[in-house]
Length: 164
Image (cartoon, rainbow, N blue to C red):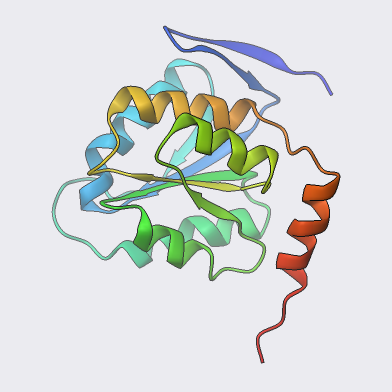
């Protein structure tokens, strides 16, 4: 697969194969979302921002479900969600079939969420994550491939679980 490196100013490179990202936040994640969207756009990553568009209070499930459903149906390969703690968006996104949303507080966690868990949604905490950490987390998350192997078996167990 042909991969094009994108120059990320001060953060290394993002490898891109025309990946499309959907991103959403609530009011508590709005400021960090703006920075992440600009970071992606500056480096030629296609991104759809589904809101919110201000710091006026909104309900995070409205944005979390919309983004997760678009990843689940294949409209987008990956998504990024941001709320105050990251917990609410994680809970919402993981209710959608086929979603593996990971709340990552460090770039290392973002990398492992891809390599070991094949996370298709990165969740960030707007109140606890600074811009530099968020950008490095996004860069590592987008650059890391799923390792498969023993991890594939574990991910399959997650997907095959049936609630009764």
